[in-house]
Length: 101
Image (cartoon, rainbow, N blue to C red; front, side):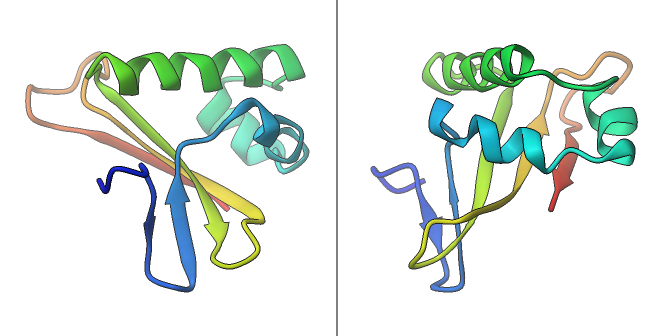
């Protein structure tokens, strides 16, 4: 990734999520997202904890890379994408990719 930790094609930007994204991210959680990605309904506390775990993983070269998907130019958060290379039951070198829009 570039030094800014952002990647953009001029239409969308991928960037690390911050606590400022928590409210919008939580508001976008629907029933399928809660069921398949979150394992149940999220709360502001669980979203903030998830954002913090992702920050720590990024800074310590951990197995999870999670990014907010934003509209380029406005910065409006419209989704997320995550890659996890330490998913239980997966073979080494295999990543679990999840996303929500």
